[in-house]
Image (cartoon, rainbow, N blue to C red; front, side, top):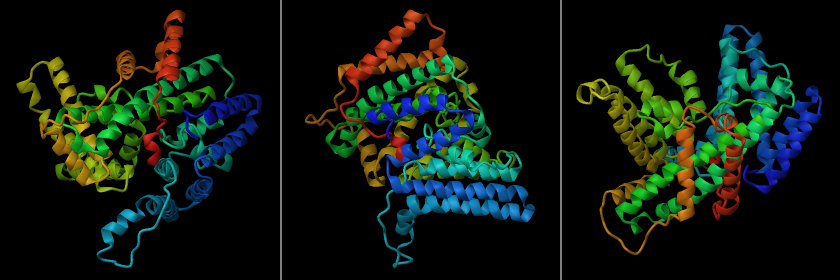
Length: 462
């Protein structure tokens, strides 16, 4: 079920009304049924995979808590193998067949439909068992609450990836009906729909036209398409996260912010502090820190950084392009760490450093996105060649409608206004007439200028 669908338009108000009508002790049942229905609307059989994850990690959490040191480790490893094993089979099986087929000729490709959002589910559930093992989290005795932690429908398909300490406690709290939560939630949903339907979905056709036939466009159009994809993927994922946070807020439940104006970053370090914050936090806490973090020698630190970025890339998809995408980010992250030591000697103005750093960071990130968007390395290389070919091909061009340009300008204005803030926080402090002018403008944009096609959220594939 898509957030921007008629199906959700009827489903969510019913769930919200029932949520506040029911006594607190029965709300977990409603959320479990609603989340099961929400996910089953995509592909019914795969809800069984999530049930399997729930049962395994629920039992492992209990066994870890009551076992001795050796058995604790055994049950943790069992949980990790179960989750990563499922993820590997559904997402990476055919990738590893390609890698090892020369050594094991009997390996065969199989047709597998990847369960939507499986990477998010496995990482969120794993964080629970890891925290129980570390002693930071008590094992949950109520399987219903734990099931809702894994299944909670607003963020179940594309995050943000929450810890049990945050979301588990939120699900257990007896949330009362509050106007401020309803107002904040509706504001976030409205803005998220605008960002997704009016920005991401309007840039998508232009990006698709270019990537389908990159050699048909000269270098100027190629660069336009590359920047268009930077906007599309940000608007798509940011829009989803904003709707998810808003939907949860309507139920009184707070989800973490997953974005903080990442394209205003002046370095790769800042970018990863602001982009997909929940995933960055997960890799930092459960991969980078266990490897020694920054408290290791320089060579080991470089290796750890590159490994984390490579794994982050591989998490996104079973393709060499994603691994190279991650390593490219790691390379530029390490390069700028070294370069920043000499910048003050050459560019004394901090303001000028930030401006140049922001332009350079955004340009490099835009180029690296090619690896993320291209179907394979051959297509990625073709795109890079087209960007720097400086050939003039008159017969093809990329079109950006005037209405899309206006909506993009509205989006940019909001990005500037919302710096270090959030749409609901910012709007609640404005004059009522200004607020309703903003609401009306966004609603009209959604009604009149939404993308002709409805595109599935990009991160659903992960």
